[in-house]
Amino acid sequence: MSVLAKIDRYLKKTGMPPTRFGRLAVNDPRLVGDLRNGREPGSRVVARIEAFLALGRER
Image (cartoon, rainbow, N blue to C red):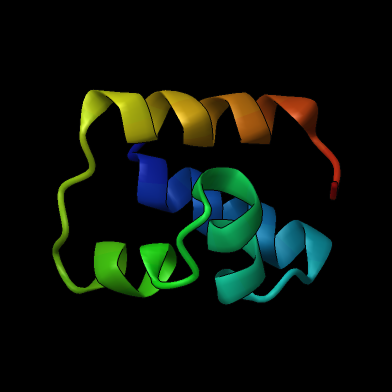
């Protein structure tokens, strides 16, 4: 499953706005919008996203 699909599933489950997710996960409020527009995240960004998702809760 792609990182964007994981994010979308998390957003749907929590009701969190995409900009808040980006800000909390990687300090980038444009992250989700950019990913939806084709941005390819680097390995460090993916690792930070995965770590945030692994917490399974809002910060």
